[in-house]
Image (cartoon, rainbow, N blue to C red):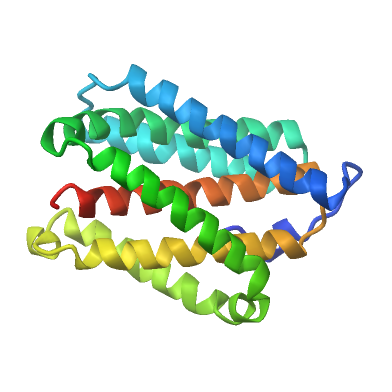
Length: 219
């Protein structure tokens, strides 16, 4: 999500088979979710101020994304992936602790639905390549608008009066899962590209989960 085609079209000396390519993506994502659980559990009782939220939850992931995007070294890209996961998971810990009290069972429901949608939409990226090839520009425009409205929602509570924004987020990030899997299917099969696409998919899946969690928490 958000990574340029120029980055994902890079080839390199770490070229591997297509099967191994997808195996690396799966392994990196699995590690990312394990790290998410560990870090979020460790920070569950943390009460960060707004400055720390932005520094840790936004600043560190941005550094990680930049590392991944600008490097063609798999180890550097993997370090970037861990920064993305660590920063987001640190902020996710206190959020999940609140939801665990506010809406028991919502976390499990959101996680289950996230897994289901990830599998379905990921498969659609392979099954409908022409569709995803045609919507890249529209998705980027929708994501830009979504981010702007979400930021505005921090200052305009009325924007969160309904779950309309959450449902839009679910649709948007579900489509991004399919879109990023389609891009993965067409990029050179290198270890570095596998790590880079893992960063994008992790961001898609975490955002999908958070929007679903907001919806399920009020059921």
